Each structure stands twice: as structure tokens, then as C-alpha cells.
Image (tube, rainbow, N blue to C red; front, side, top):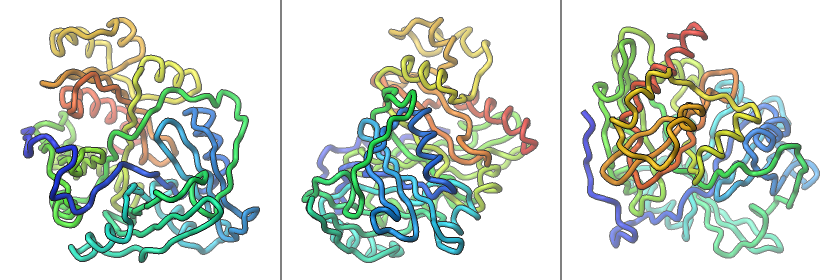
Length: 377
């Protein structure tokens, strides 16, 4: 049963020992960063803003920094056959290695979390160049994923010291209206969800925002459980999923089978005009999950009046749900690589603060249809 477990998050909680300003960037380890950067520019409309590699004195890797709205993606590939990056890609294929968090004090963030039990990924250090300085520190979360604390108050460069500004004229590379990251979803193994919820509560001071059990997130064949944790000001939200018993293999089990460890399953991105955004993404070849036409037969009875034209919602195969604050529109891409792991959610919030519970059954049936085509259900 869906359970709300905490009051609304506060804008400036006085007791917050880990104040976060939001997501600084997501870093993917990938097999070919140049080609991945092209895909995200051409298909999703990201702009290339910075680069580091052999031309900048970095001998073991190349990184491309892409930006749209407040979203910053870093795509990193190894230039060596036996590096940590190479091993990460061999094991997981392309995937999120770093969920970086923007803070005012990286050293204090590191100290506060490690003294509460976080496993250090790397000690605080400072990088400097002609644009100022940035302090970084890192801790581990689920799987091999890292949270990097980024303190950039005194920096005006394109990304980090060591990176140079870079632009590209990729065809169709104009932005599509993606604004900022709403939440990042992690998949963990059997019985591990509560362990990682406790990690975020005890180590990072997050609050449990909402719980979904296998009655909420299930179909005839599969089920999962999920809990959502949020930091004090609500700028950073992490749903954490684990498998639940079902007749067949759940999407979480499929992810774990192919990623070979817990990791980031999908990234939800806000747009203020989902119809425009999705129309353009479809035009550029981005593939989305689809729900049957029957989903729309009683849509307005279920969610009430909406501002958008129902026929346009249906034509784009958008999902709609409502909570006590308002409603939301959402849609999910298919996995963006050959392994069925990472995908994206595009979401527009019209007041709603929830996660589309009313769409769970239709969504997961759509995922199951794709699993069946892959022979993984």
C-alpha cells in the first residue's frame, strides 16, 4: 500500500547537516564518449560546453560535458585497456558512475557523511586554474555508484579546472526543453531497499518521503517495491527499487541481470511543455514505451479535468496522473543502449508532487511487453 511517511520537506531546515543546492552533474562511464556525446546532442538536444582529454593534458581518458537547462551530463571514456573506467564499462556497459551533488562546503559534507558511516570514495581535494577553484570529495552509495560533493562557489570556468570550453555544431542539436533533474532512480538487490533507505536517512540526513509496496507496483506477472527519499529542501530525490516476488521476472531483476550490480536505472527530467519536448524527441528518433489505447478510454474520469487536449495526449502516448496537489504528465523512453538498463523519464508537473502511482500498472505492463520481446520476462 502506498504510504506517505513524512511531512512536506522544508525549504531551509535548521537541522540539515548536509545542505544540498541540487544535482551538480551526472557522470556516465561509456565505451565511446565521442559517439555518446553525438547521440545526446543530436537526439536529446544537449549542448557541448566543455572537454578534457589528451589535447588538454589528460592522458588516460576523455570527457565531454553536455548541458541543457540546469542538467549537466559528463560522458567519460577510457583511453587505456585496463583502467577502472574500462572495467566499469566491461561489467556494466554504459552507466552512471557519479551522481554529483552541488554543495557550499565539500569538506564539511565529506566529514559529516563519513563520520556517520559513509564509505569514502576519495578525500577532499581542490583543483585550481585561471577561473578559480573547485573542491571535490566523494562517498560510495549502492553498487559502484559514487556521490561526489562539488563546491564551486569560487569558480567561473566552463565545468572544472582541467576542462576547456568546447562547442559543436551537431545537426538537429537544438535544445528540446529539458529543464532539470526531478529524481534519479536506483535499483538494488533482493532485500536491500531498506538498507539503502537507512543509509540515506542516517548518513545523509534524507527523509523517507513515500513508500510503494508490491500491491502498488505489480502486474499479473511481476512486482517490485520502492521507497523515495528526499533531502531537506526537496531539491534531491532518490527512489530506491528492489524486486518483489511474482510469477515472472521483474524489470528490476532484468536490470540486475544485465548491469551485474545495483545502479541507476532511470533519470527523470522536468520539462515545462511535454508535448513539444516529446514531439521533438520522437522526430529525432528517441523511442518511448507505449500503452494501449484502452488506457485513454476513462482517463478524464480517473484524473479529472486537464488543460491539455486529450487527443494530443493520446497521439503522443503520454501518461497522466493526479494527486492532491495537482496533476502530472509523463512518458518513459526505452533503454538508451543495447543492454536493458538505463532509460529516461520525461515529466511535466502541473502542481503534482507525486510519482504517477495511477500509471504504474500501465507502465509496467508496457515494460513487460519489451522484456518479452527480449526473452527476459
